[in-house]
Image (cartoon, rainbow, N blue to C red):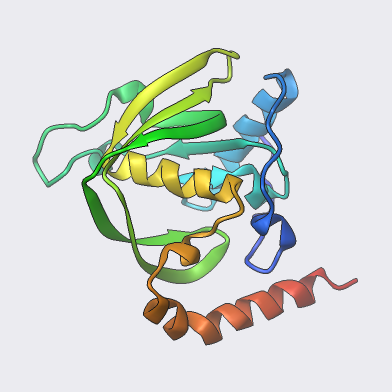
Length: 188
């Protein structure tokens, strides 16, 4: 039975820490990935990084619906079916497209906060899968965006860091309240 973790919120120090590489894919890593998928689904998300469940390890999970895997409604699919659900161990983006696009993003660690973020349209990603096998995949569109968002978490970067200064300024009060509430909830 999968465990559902509490998702840490903005203001929790682990969200700003760089993840430690995973030395070996073990049963514990596979169990954590399974629990992270369950936690992400329970929260209606499309991605989750280990830092968001309080673990400082280089592991993230992403799963997008098939209907998100098109450039425009009715258009052709962008990625293979087997890439729409990924557990990424020690992921690295090794190449990005010159083409970029802006889209409103949210984050499970930032409830009710969204903002436009510009990201590369396509990426080449190297990672280890849950079988311990190294992989290299090219991803496009929303799937590439979701992976970039989660890999940012593993570097201690959160999506508000990628927003325009004007948007961050507009969110300043809400972010301060979220951080203050998170810190208050952490007090014994």
